[in-house]
Image (cartoon, rainbow, N blue to C red; front, side):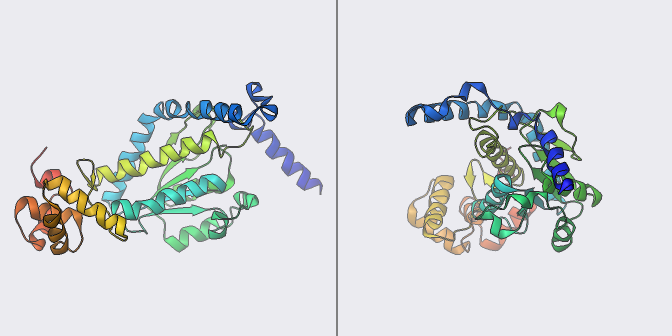
Length: 310
C-alpha cells in the first residue's frame, strides 16, 4: 500500500506544475452560471486554439516533410496515444483511406488498452507500457517508419515509451503535446507544442487540448498527402468510391477537373475502373487506362507534373 501511495505522490508531483493540469481563476464560478454563459466561455476559449496551433506551423511543416520523405522510402506512420489522444490518432488514421486512397496499413492509430478503449474509457491503460514491444513486433515497426506520440500532458507513459521504442528501432519520432516546449524532455526528433493554456474544466484535456491536437493531426496527414500527390489542385483525386456519396463525389471531381458534363465523367470513371486520378488523365490527355497509369507512375502520382503545370 505504501508503494502505491508513493507512486501516486510521484505522479502528483509530475502533473502539479503542468499548464494543462492547472486551474484558471477566471472560470472559478462557472458552476453557477446559466447554460448560455457557460457555453460562451467554452466557445471563447476554443477560439484561441487556432492561434496556438499557428505558432507551431514551422514544426508541423518540419514533421510533414520528414514523414513524407519516409513515405517515399516505403515508411509508414503510427500514431500512439491514450484516452482522448489515442482516439484522435485513430480517427485521423481511419479517415485517410476513404479520403486519399491510402492503404489502411500505411497510417495506423494505436491506443493504450487496445480496440475496446476506443469506445470505453480505461484510464489506467495509459500507465501500462508492457504492450509496446509486442505492438512493435506485431506491426514490424522499424526504419523508415515514423512514430507520432500524442499526449496533452507530456507525461503519458504509453506515449513516451512508444517514442523510446521507436527511436531504438531507428524510426523518426514526433511528439505532440500542449505544454511549453522548454518544459519537455522526450525522445522525439520534432516537438509540436500548441500551448492552449488551462482548460475551462481544470485538467479536462478533452477540451482545448484535444481541439489543438485534432487540428495538428489533420494538418499533418493532409500535408503529407498533398506532398504524396494525393491531390490535383485542391481535388481529392485518390479517394475511394465505397459509398453512393463518394461515387457521386468522384463524378463531381472529374467534372470539375475536366470541365466536362456528367455523362462524360461517368464514362471516364467506368473506363478508369473508378480511379478518379486515372479518369482525369484519360480525359485530359486522351489516352487509355494503361497509358494513364504509366503517366501517373512516371510523375510519381502528381498530376500537375503529368500536365506540365508547374
